[in-house]
Length: 159
Image 1 (cartoon, one colour):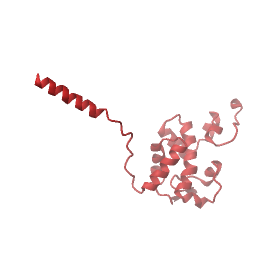
Image 2 (cartoon, rainbow, N blue to C red):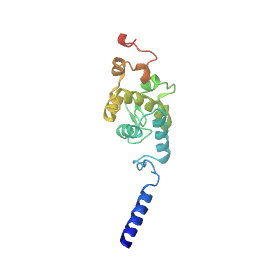
Image 3 (tube, rainbow, N blue to C red):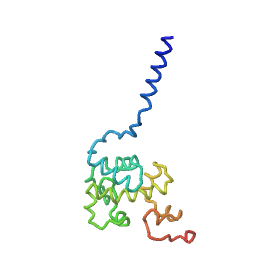
Image 4 (cartoon, one colour):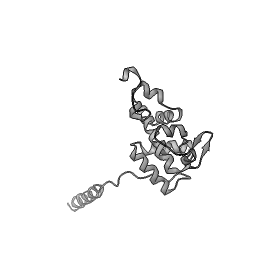
């Protein structure tokens, strides 16, 4: 009888401990070259444009390994965006302004949102569309306005 009482008490204790509130998702550790301030900016723009944080990190790792001043030919900054592409998204500065981490994130994550929409939520396809451009795919799917590429649809079947 004492063993049963002890067992029931123990199980009740374990059950009570396991019902504590869930602490929520745990942030992954910082990546090489990433700083806490940079992580905060990445999270802010990912959340603002409703793009999964892991997707933004995947693109940044692929494009620059978290180096805000990265340059590769005509591409600028952490997310290696073309100034012309940033301009389509609303950027009105000089190309070198895209070497600022926050400026780069503001316009490149906005562009990444379009790739995310065109990919139907598939992260690997979103990275592919981000890297190669998604204008024609968005046009054919009547998503030019939704992705921010144009202010009106141009395909006849979209009107």
